[in-house]
Structure formats: structure tokens, C-alpha cells
Image (cartoon, rainbow, N blue to C red; front, side, top):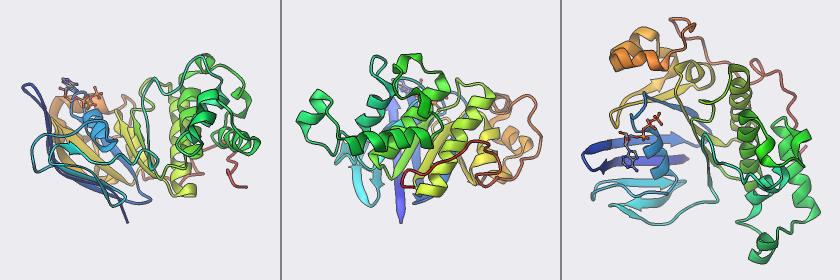
Length: 279
Ligand SMILES: Nc1ncnc2c1ncn2[C@@H]1O[C@H](COP(=O)(O)OP(=O)(O)OP(=O)(O)O)[C@@H](O)[C@H]1O
């Protein structure tokens, strides 16, 4: 089944062509990296797929899990329950506990009054706690979200996705502000929910090293266009230089090998104990 389908999507901001006739398809169950230098259009594309913005002109169309979410520059219907988006920052409500932030993933399914006063059943709390265990941070449930590290915040946001029972997770540069070991833990969790829960993952990344390591397929953008869509194993440093010229330096870690490493199945990269939500 096609999870995300984008066809002929364009978007201008004044003179800037942020998206230029973009077309792509993600099959359900894929984990795909979206790479590109700063300003190449990754976040703009993600906002459109998330249904937060409408493209320009008559030709553009986006479908999510078979339902048209926008066409011809008009937002149709927002499948908010099916798609969860996490951003580099601002995923959590700082003054609320981590557990409450994860419980917010239930809001689409509980009566409005319960959401308003923050009343959740024990089974919902248990599920939220299990989701935190699943992403490796059960011990922070009672803490205020503002006290978490950047990597823990990303993992709490992923736990909320599990509670939401979203079928598609789009993560916009979830690791760009993290140190390498925190970044690996977040990528491990994304890879795990992809393989174990069959959640389709689209993750935008600044550094191609993580795309090579975690995603079989990479979509590369430059100046609002897709310039490559294929196996991540093809993304050697030389090929990146061909695609991006000098800007390729922005995408490669200084100590990265010139040739890509094969994608490792989840488990070989992770040292984290993984507990399954429904175990
Ligand atoms: N709301 C906006 N108003 C004006 N210009 C915008 C807006 N959003 C994006 N742009 C412009 O569109 C282009 C693409 O931006 P976008 O944020 O999508 O790139 P990106 O690949 O996500 O970059 P980064 O990796 O730095 O986050 C940039 O030139 C940006 O300045």
C-alpha cells in the first residue's frame, strides 16, 4: 500500500522556489531518509505532507494512505491521526510531565472533556508508560519535559507517536542538535518502530552518514527539486559531490568513510533494551 504519494508539488515564497515540481511515493513500511543542504526544501516538503500548508497551482497533489490530503493548492482533509510529525524542537509542552506529554497522543481518541481536564484512564497511563519504556526512558515519566535532554525529548515525542497509534512518522531533523551517541539512540528507536511496529518513517537528516546507516532508501533534494531517489548505498562522497558540489561538505561528517557502509538491520546498531508496547 502507498503510505505517502506526492505528485507535481510546487511552492514559492516570494521569489524563492522552495518546492519545484516534486513527486515521490513511499510504500507502507519503508524507512526513508530525506537529505539536502540547508534551504533545499526538506522542511517545506514535510510541512506539506503533514497537511500544514498547501502548495501552489493546480497540478500539485498529496495523498496519505490513499486519501487525498491536498490537491490543486487546497487542503482537503487532514489525516492527523494517521501521521505524526516530530520536529527538531518544540515537540513537548515544557511545563507538563513527560507522561502527560505522551498521553497527549490519545487526544484524538478520548472525549474532549477528558482531554481538557487531563483525565486519562489507568490503561491509557499504563500504555503511555510502556511507550516510554519502549523508547528507553521509563525513568523520566514524572519529570517536567523542560528537564529532559534533547535526545530524551525526541524519544518522548516518539513515545507519543506510539500512543497515538500513528501509521506514519515524519521526523524533521530529529538529530541535528544531538551529540553522536544521543543521535544514534534516537535513530535506533526510529528504526525499531519501523521494523517492529511497521510504522512508515520519513526522516530528514543533515548528515548523510545516518541515512546510509539506517535507511535503505534516500531521497535527496537540492533547490526544491528531487535530485536523487534510490538506494542509500549509492551515496558515496564522490556521488554527493556530483549532486551538491561544494555544499556536499555540509552533508558529510568529517571522519565519515568515503564509501557508504551497508544498512544495518536494527539490533546490530542498538545496545538499548527494547520492550514492546504490547508485550
Ligand atoms: N515560510 C517561509 N517564508 C519564506 N521563505 C521560506 C519559508 N519557508 C521556507 N522558506 C524558504 O524556502 C527554502 C527551503 O526552506 P526549507 O526550510 O524547506 O529548507 P530545508 O532543506 O529544510 O533547510 P534546513 O536544513 O536549513 O532546515 C529556503 O530558501 C527558505 O528560506
